[in-house]
Length: 483
Image 1 (cartoon, helix red, strand yellow):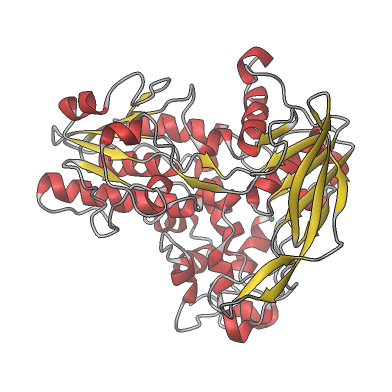
Image 2: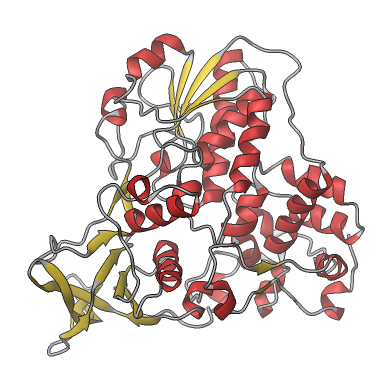
């Protein structure tokens, strides 16, 4: 398998970045691919470990040692075919996935995992460059029509698999462009949108129909779709953001992160300011920005604010600062809790941990500062550890723009979900089993964030693929689609 001594002879080397002073001037991707000879050397580090824990780390079950071996042997077309047998969109995950596969890599025990994400990305990028990625239409149709609601990674993966099985899927998207979170939630400097456009063209050639500006529950009823289609797949996102319930929350200048990010993505796409920001422009230029929330969305707000020309950017996280390095004996091969510094953090940001926001302070209806307090872990009355405010730790933080990036609690229930009349789980997500992805209502399936709650792009792709297999089996009695 590969080069048996590769991991002993070759040091880990990953893709590099353009310098911050250069990349902050554009909205383009700034990752520098590895040269092909170096990439094959990195692939040779896959150590034939016997039990490939990377398989368990990867939600779509990529056959990682196999495509590493093929890259090492420079069998690029075979590597691409292997990769695309498990992942419909490796160019998406190769850019925005946090790479749980690398956390599970045996070499991560000594903090030098194989550069799996980089190898995956460059396999698929080479496939597009060489013209190897082409439409794969089914040789014959089944006559079965499926409505897929939501064009994020789950909906796209589900629709593509169904089309390749010979069905006729139609994807309904409420926005003006296809892509969901990929299109309007992830900044272009992390993933440029032409990557989505070329996949859409491929899928159209495979028989997928796309309907934009089509909000199910508003422009068309759920019942109409059930009348016109054999199956309905609910593949929307977890779009209801977690709010910050503090005094003076209604001050001008406090906004949800996704409103801020969506506006900028529309500007980059070429929309006029009237179209991009119909309710008013959100800009960080010259402002003291405070981002509340320490996850990926918060990081995206930091990178966007710095490109706007913010006077300062501060990120607040309510949880304590995690360790710089995890305890491998306790966590490997599971995803570890540790301090993660993104490329956006490196571009300029102050981070503060174990901080609670108590109230907003403003003048003439506009935000001027946040009153915050520091937290510590203490033992509660029931014996469990809880976070409690440290007495006398209150402080103020100057703020002209506050962006709430605290995650999402569930899909929006108004309209589509309410009309579908499906049962919800205790968290407010659509209730459906991963065994068959069927909801409580006949002929309605659900997958992705609408079913599992906010999650990763790679998990959405997995659920879309598995839901397609379940729909195919439901319609045809059996399915040859992979799970």
